[in-house]
Image (tube, rainbow, N blue to C red; front, side):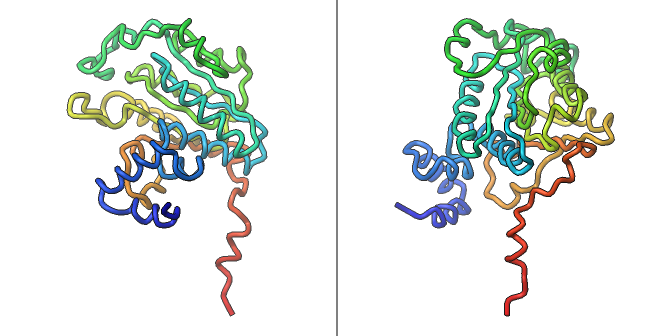
Length: 277
């Protein structure tokens, strides 16, 4: 068996080699779960990534529990994967993770205009079988209803732990606008930095996601309207050989959060910078 160090070096090689290595590590579950999350060799690696990093941040800040959310559950495969990752990650960090899934259950609404790119999504798509999904879930709570109303009532109705990770799979610009309003509900309901996955910010030659429609437009408008809350692209993936989902990870910074400036760096890291005798 190759060492983790050797595997990581190979992962910096040409894309076909990297993809094969990741495929077989995922298939045979080679290495620890934490290692596989780090290289994206797990089911729905984007979900594992945002939950893992949210839990890591929460632990460093002293939170005993956090919440993670999926906006746009549809059939429920993503929410099931989120549950599985949450179960393993909460054991790694010894914190509790609550899971919530938001959906209308009746499929996509009618698009409002071109910004919902109706050429690639239509009303009635992605209907949820609520009873079937509830039988499959082990810990998640489904929040069913129109996103504009459920976002506003969520904190009063469910009293969730601070939110640290959110997966957005809303398709539409209009639905994403409504879901982003959650960040206006008070900094105490979030970690100072929330890890986010936006599914529809990268696409193929049919969907043609761009900055003037869909999720990207919703993010851009949100940032223009908020001086002290920003949904930003992280730059740490520049240090790694890219995978597609890397381009769909964002981080929401709440600059006025009471713990935004709390030190989370490993203090021991300074020892590596001392002048050697």
